[in-house]
Amino acid sequence: MTHTTPYPIGTLGQPWGPAEIDAWRATQVKRRSYADEVLAAIEPLKASYDVETYGDVEYAGERYAFYALRTRAWRDDLPVMVVTGGVHGYETSGVHGALQFLREHGNDYVGHANVLVVPCVSPWAYERIHRWNFDAIDPNRNFREGSPAAESAALVRLLAPLGDKVLMHIDLHETTDTDESEFRPALSARDGKDYEPGEVPDGFYLVDDADKPQPAFQKAVIEAVAKVTHIAPADANGEIIGSPEVAHGVIEYALKSLGLCAGITPARYCTTTEVYPDSPRATPKECNDAQVAAVRASIDYALAHPAG
Image (cartoon, rainbow, N blue to C red; front, top):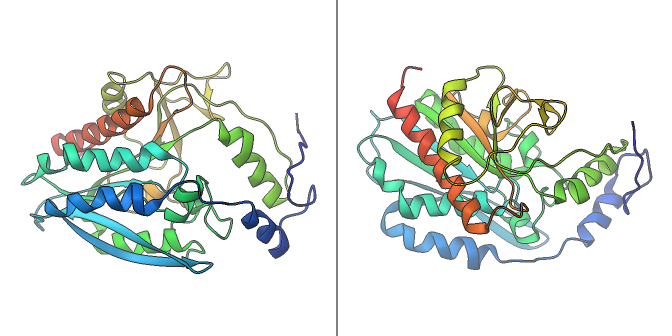
């Protein structure tokens, strides 16, 4: 069944133009501080990691620098493990889970792997607790060369020189109630399409790469996270967010062809986490801890199975 719930911006059935994007921008206000919550958390990590700016963006006179943190004892003979968070700025545990991993466990892998962490890919959206960037573009459909999203293009440039040295890439996300109350209706309005309501799963799940699935890897991550928080069940159709559940708490997308972050590199092991922070059964700490558990399990599995 197709639904036509109107969104307050735009004309039903017509894609947005510049006027509608301007109207949408006018509704976006700062709700938290990238400097106070993210950059301040990066500052003490400079004692243990090499910290670099890999690009920046300026929106309406506001400049945001993009930061990456690397293992200080980087060795070219070791595999690279990539952790990204905050591709969607509103997905809080992705950002703070990545930072918590660095504080508590990042240096556990010195001498075994090179760790590269980008905790907040989309700082403008982080401040506004939104999915899109300033231009109403979803960075997580645009990780490719020549991307229209500055956030995506900068990360692609950062990771390109690493090539096939990247053994594992985990991208930390959340699925929230606002996906259905705000972001999917906004997407439908922006693209001039009808909105069909979906179901928000209660719990943690993973998105594997349909083009090169690694079921044992995904299973190891699910088992580690299940010790921290609950795993999302499939719905009555055997699906999670409209995709068939291929294993407990796991679905698949074609990561690279869809322009998703976890598909940037040719990493053998890649996954996207999805935490549900709105669950009555989860706390913010639990959500962050789940992200950390997923990162650790991903790196540990990749180190134990470097050849697949």
